[in-house]
Length: 168
Image (cartoon, rainbow, N blue to C red):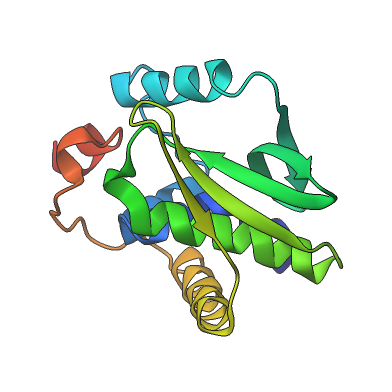
């Protein structure tokens, strides 16, 4: 794998906070079980929620779920099925805000949980930016490993689309 092949994207940032092994698997194009019910539900919620807004803004190696302009201010949104993964979702959205900022676009973020009827604002501040930059470096370190990190059981394993891969 060459440096040209590697781009840290929002998805890798999301999984970094859930499972380091998933970061490695995804970055090496080892796909999760496509028939996993949680993945299917997540896609369905993303496709059927917030239909009045523009969908999928692609910047670099990242895709933001929804975006709109509010009084001239750009607002990008990340749609999640549950706030259970709040830290992962916040950092994924902060990564998107960093990518926009890097390109001279000021934006604010909103995490959206349509099933919970909740929204949460995300702003890129100095501390969050420093955390994102640290995470990006660690993701690159993980990606260059010859083998995936060993599986480590955590509270997210039960509903993971890689569960069979890790624990069979």
